[in-house]
Image 1 (cartoon, rainbow, N blue to C red):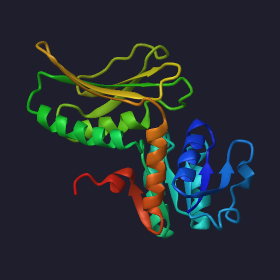
Image 2: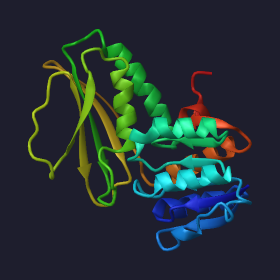
Image 3: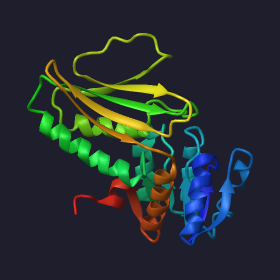
Length: 247
């Protein structure tokens, strides 16, 4: 496939490596110095675009790809309040779109494990639950998109929790949380690719599941796999459609 990379930071460079390893050609690279080069004309021969840019640029990138009818895989997070708008635009314009908060195989297994554990824990209200996420200090959004996906999986199955709330440790003033809030505790530490932990605790004991990324390779490879899956498909998809663990 001919691939466009929208965003060329550490993730973009890692994705490029896997594209080349898997026999694809990177024909267009967009970074913050050449954003004007992202045009429908330059996307004409692109099979799939992969976006790991910034929350501030991702919407414009998506709309440009829709204009060019170029399939796009989006790993950028921090824009999900617009997801319904993008879904409508994708479907009405007959485009191809796939998004995910995390494309790592291991993380997507963790998502399923998290939902299953929440189902098991729901009958036991003595256990409180929280989500903790740790990322590098360059991460622009808080909480992480992965942490939000984890929290949403918990909210689907833990009846006593109604909505997630976020605390960015070390920067936020103390907040008052309600008992039915699901806390996502965010930490920003140098050189941490990503660690996510779900903790159920009671006065008697504690249950914990954790995913720790050792590097960015899992995210990058998963994004390329998602691009291969999206090629020649039409519609609005999430990374869950790629892995489809239920089948």
